[in-house]
Amino acid sequence: MGGVRFEHRYTYRKAVNIIMLSTTGLLTLLALIPLFWVTGYVIVKGGRYLDLDFFTRLPAPLGQPGGGVLHAIEGSILIVALATLFSAPAGVLIGYYAARHPNTPLGMGVRFATDVLSGVPSIVVGLFVYGVVVVRLHTFSVLAGGVALAIIMLPTVIRSTEEMVKLVPPSLREAALALGAPEWRTAISVVLPAALEGIVTGVILGVARAAGETAPLLFTTLGNDNFEVIRLAKLAIGVGASPWEIARLILTQPVDALPLTLWKYSQQPYPERVNQAWAIALVLMMLVLGLNLMARVWLAYRRRR
Image (cartoon, rainbow, N blue to C red; front, side, top):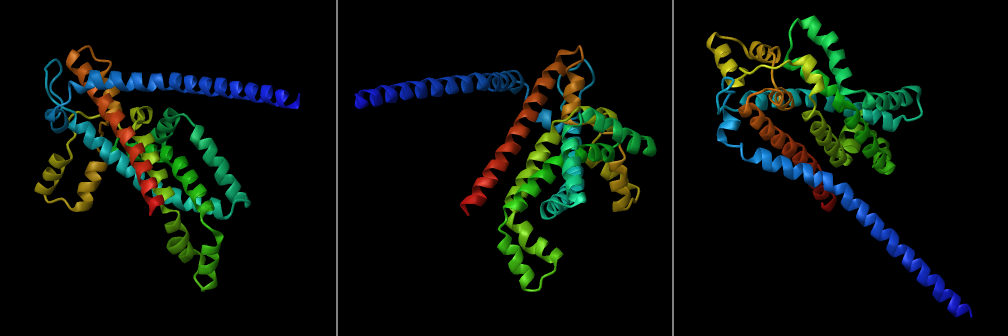
């Protein structure tokens, strides 16, 4: 009698397990459908308009075919590089402090501020930078765009650094301190190198998020179809400008970026610009996917080593 009851119970559990696994798999497939649908649609629509001119030429006059988005590519590189320069060192140091002093008033304040900042809409960040940077400099600029994207990147860098530092075995830090190394030397030479793979992953993910932002750039960089770094540098060198003056000239110029150009081109009544908007969408999608993939590959490589 007991054996029959056990067999019925086993059969019931097996049936429930099969039903739940099937339901989970079906819902997973349903969740993946929008991802593959959007990805495939953008590849089909944008892939046909990608060519060498798209990456190497400035925009053609309105209503004429051809041209490219070199200005937006250069602008995106400059803005994201500047944002990374601003956010990565500060975010790593803040994350290290929050991990090492979690129960202090400042440590708890840092975590609370990070949570709040990660939930602030990006357009609010752009409006804030407009009032703080653009109004004071009296111009839209690469610098303002870099500051806005740096603020957006900070929560990702801080959180990833904090979690990775917590995973470092305390014995490593204690051994360094026992050998007489000061706290700052221990952090730079022992703790942060041990957490480097997670920190780099966090920075890459922060870059991937910032590279696709449009709203903050509407208030900070505005756009510039004629921006070209090499041409500006040559003009500045031709008049005898110093490296500092060249950098200042470039950083204070209004500039375009890929997401901002995509937003502008998609609203224009010219088919050529709409087609290029699809191509920009494909480039942006591949950029974000590539950065995320790079982060995963880097993390897997470091773990194998």
